[in-house]
Image 1: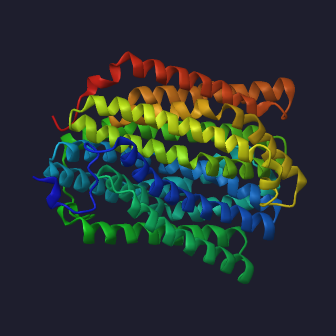
Image 2 (image 1 turned 30 degrees about the vertical axis):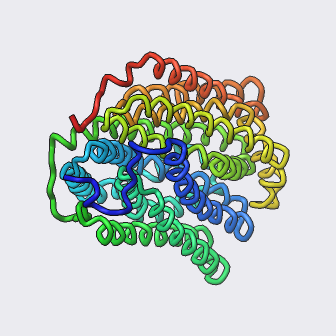
Image 3 (image 1 turned 135 degrees about the vertical axis):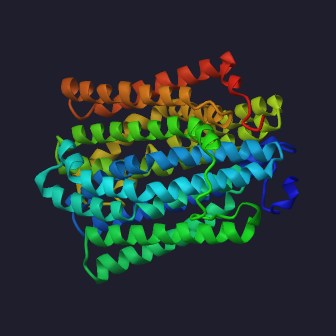
Amino acid sequence: MERGKSSHKLRNMTEGSISGHLLAFAFPMFLGSLLQQLYNMVDSWVVGRFVSEAALAAVGIGYPVIFMFTSLFMGMSNGTTVAIAQYYGAGKMDRVRDVVDTTYTFFTLAVVPITVLALVIARPVLLLMRVEAGTMGDAYLYLMIVSGGLIGAIGYNMNSGILQGVGNSRASLLFLGISAVMNIILDLLFVLQFHWGVAGVAIATIISQLCSWLFGVFYINRNYTAFAIRPFCLRFDRKLFRKIMGIGLPAGIQFATVSIGMMAIMSQVNAFGTSYAAGYNVGNKLDSMAFLPIQAIASAITAFVGQNVGAKKEDRVHRGVILGILYAVGWCGIIFAVLYPARFLAASFFTDSQGAVNGAALLLQCILPVYPLFAVQFTMCSVMRGAGESVVPMLTVVTSQVLLRVPGVYLLAHFFGPTYMYYGFGIGWFFGAAATVIYFFSGRWKRRGSLAE
């Protein structure tokens, strides 16, 4: 089938300016992620300013737990992006249709069991994280409410994976724009007007995510009739699903393992008290905001590499990788120059607690100087996933983010105290950057070939 019959919104990255394609794809992704982080930051700002330091810590504690439960579908979304990009790059729109039907059928059948599992194990997970008694009530309430609304967050990721595969990153910006505005309004209404505290923030989050997902379904069905979403068609291609999961499952395992590592670090941070826990939440929010352009570039690289692998244009892949690395590392220099000297001021936006401000500034002080290492690793992993190689990125990320970073944080905290524990992040990032660069230049990532073949 010809690619042009599907929709004028499809982006063919196999021709034309590489830099233009990467930036045109990455910019809407950046704005969309910025909006996503904005409404996450509003949650922390509202509870930090208008509820309590314990509530601020509770919201931060809940994040890695929710991330763990959505990991499988985030990985599948990644596999969907790569499969669609490669089939689209090869001009096989009928297979794009098959990918969408198969992934949404799995989503329909699996989302309820995942939600039930999240609700059942929420409290045991919080106990393992050594959450203080003063924070436990708010953390459990927040986690139960957000877990109950996982369908919205998971559905949004599925839609995003589909659209990124055909080169459309602008639509996700629209979905998140609606979600962000709704979340801000509902946060202020539920907390300031109704005085619902942490519960209000959680309810605002799930309503906003649900609307973002449903609007995405409407948008895709209206603009992409060639592969409209049919969640109850139960059309499932087992062979294709195995291929998608061959790419997506390692990424899902990676995300889940990283979230477990995040919870392990959070457990160590919690041991130093509520102020450190609140500060870690604030520092993570600022860290996530700073990293958004790199994340957007990496997403563009995944789609770009996928399409050009499908079209068998290896020279464009190499040129795209070089440009992506340059953009990512260049941004690291900019964010260091801006955020590092302003880290105390930025943290004070969220809370009046000096202990929390100091904790957030400490995290930024330790990680910003080594940001380029993480940027290189993140971008190179996206290159490999776009080419269909997902096992090696999984192994490098798990090793760097969990097997090296977590022990590094614990050992530094044990021997030198909390002031030095965050330097453990750099230990893992150094290994990750070195491993991914070496593997890329070995050329072994090409062995997967294209799904379209």
